[in-house]
Image (cartoon, rainbow over all chains, first blue to last red; front, side, top):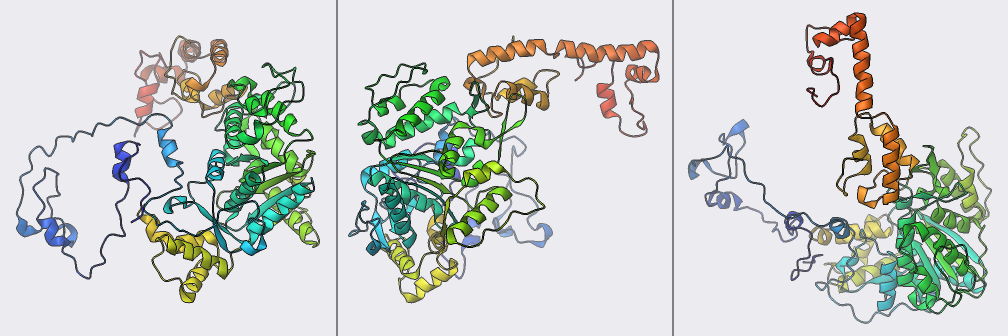
Length: 479
Length: 120
């Protein structure tokens, strides 16, 4: 039985949380009869109060049979003492909720699978293959929060991904554009659970394997829902989010350390309150300050440094694109709601996506939409339709003449982007995935034509998230 | 201010505990100092805390606000109006029926309204 938490080392959170994890349901026998009635009747005497009316409303109370005898309950009215436990430290519950577990020793090891390399991710021959992620790639992806807690990495012994047709296409487009020193601006769309975030992860893996600088915003929602600190930037209507910027600096440093430590600062940054020398490495620049006040100016200098010619190509990704296309929940000092494009990090991304930023070394800007968690924004939807039509050479659908509240900034941010629509996988790819699950010992059925067709159809013709739900549901329940 | 709050308390909640500040006023103060609504007191830099304190000292809260309310009630009573008499007797002021529930009137309508020594 697969389980998320290691049985040997019970990690904290508090005992209470451990107590409330449901016990394995898959171990419950599907018996044709039950001996539970007699079993319950033989329970040892406890002081827990039981209702006196055993046959209230004509129902049979299975917990105690009438012939088991009555019990005397003394002290029924006294309050039970709540069990004393130490509450977990701040941030512990959140860390537990958002923990990512990538290995599970209860699953079988699947041997004979290749590792992902820069070559085989663009190779059309590798469509339909499961590839493993190399160790350092895993560390880099973990540092930029590419893995999501809702994905089922914790069921398997080692993380593997399926190289589907879309992965290879995307990787090819990325590498070709960057190879020609152009900027690829793309939005990944598709239905719910179809694999968009996973494609984003594979794009980031491509970036790391090809030695690009990868900057990721894992949840665009966090920047917009007024949950992190914000502060105004002098002499402009912009705002910055200092604590989030510091966190991003740490992620960038951790994931791109090897590349950044070979690059030196070339410009003069006199206006910065911290001393930045010419010979300093960019890696040192990312960790130069811990003060929230200096976070945004240092980030702007860092960004300028990265945009100089002679630097490695940059990959910018953002998950949850529709969240940054609305007015945020933050308020300005004059109590007006701030548009999300007035925030530094968001503006950096939207200017790159809209084509305003010039990348001399080639770059790719990738926005991943989410269908399961996205606000409905008519301007964004219209912009997507127009971009998709332009991409496919169809006539561009006009704006609704009776809707007055179109947001020009959204259209500017989506100016000339390509749209990458993701659908379900093909049957061969689905079969490869199911064979991997079966080899891991998680899928307990024969992988033949019949079963693959069944799961494929149940998932709506290959929608990967639904296929996981359909095939692995009973295993996930027991986690 | 003179009161110290625990550092894990929400800033918005801490502001609301002052008499005269409710959620609206607190939200405006937070926006003015660019503090996000989910901020805890420990996360706010000391400079901003000082700015908040000075701002609070300029606003009419606590005793100033209480005095305004009490002055209004006193004025009504001194003029000998119907409303003043209702306040003095602790009965509903705004034309409600006294046949049924007048709990809130008994609690709130008094001459020394809003004081900590009152029943509120």
